[in-house]
Amino acid sequence: MTLVDRANQVALARLLAAEPVLVNVRPAREVLPGLAERRLYHAGPPVPWERMCGPMRGAVIGALVYEGWAKDHGDAEALAGAGGIAYAPCHHVGAVGPMAGIISPSMDVFVVENRAHGNRAYATLNEGLGRALRYGANDETVIRRLVWMREVLAPALRVALGRLEEGIDLRALIAQALQMGDEVHNRNRAGTSLFFRAIARPMLQSGFPTEKVAEVFDFIAGNDHFFLNLSMAAAKAGLDAAHGVGGSSLVTAMARNGVEVGIRVSGLGDRWFTGPAAVPEGLFFPGYGPADANPDIGDSAITETAGLGGFAMAAAPAIVQFVGGRAEDAVRATLEMYEITLGEHGHYRIPALGFRGTPVGIDIRKVVETGTLPLINTGIAHRAPGIGQVGAGIVRPPMACFTEALAALAAARGAPA
Image (cartoon, rainbow, N blue to C red; front, side, top):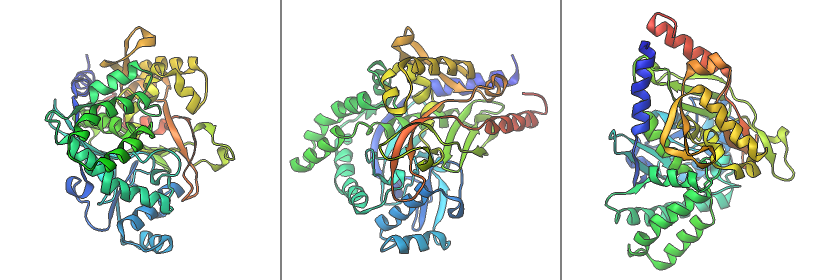
């Protein structure tokens, strides 16, 4: 057994041992380091305003108006490009954000604690599909929804979670959702329903105004993707615990900013290895097509990195109705991912494969050796700012991320990896 193999055993054991528990909902400024005035976090590897894609620019503009830092879109665009706003990846502060992934100080985030290792991860609250800030939409309806989330949704969740001494066990919910037909990236119907059941009684008993509780229930019940951000934070909590194992070739982050895809590797510190983002192939809403699509974007590939999403599609054959393809393609996708991973998840199991654990622990060596790239199922944003989601599909990261990371790992060890 090589030194890399031994390091991978340690990193994978930490990932598989993760116990992600939802413990709180807090304003981002209270829990994310450095999120002060005039600072935003975004999805993917680092990208300056000048290189940001249309949907990320749209989300930045919307966030500046939402925060009251700009009075309108024109004012926001001028501020965003004038050097007065600092930008950094969500991943740099233990957070993840879907699609554009913008987190601003007044937005609330889920606080997820990994009880096995003591680290915490964070994700914004899910706005729903269609015209949402994370897809770059930023009109008055988007801003009003964000304000309602801050004034009603987040406080209601906070008081309800305050009544749950042990929090909500997200690992248990994810495991059960997989048994019910989710893969917890682009299909979250079961996960959202399970979360609804877990939060309903404490919220009703919390003393929060009844009419506001009804609004919250209606919102969650009408948003099948609500659980997505929770699965992302759960995945991030486990992968951060697996990061920093010297010599390990396990991928601990895979993220996209709409221009580039970047990965981080456990044994290579906080360095990003990047390559150009591709346009997803899939199904488009009426009136839209591939020419409208922005290249791949978002931190939600953290689910695939943790053995979920595209890696667990065999558990969710109905996902093909959303991203395209046939039911057998979902099974084939999961079987392919076993070729590039270090193990199988002991908690996340797939009924259609005889309850085999999901493939987990992307190994950069296996990716390069086999030529098989990780498969990501994803939403598709319009390339222009302010429009929003136009479809959903399948995409893979560029091989350059993995070949460069493998070369760096070999150089760090002074020998072939």
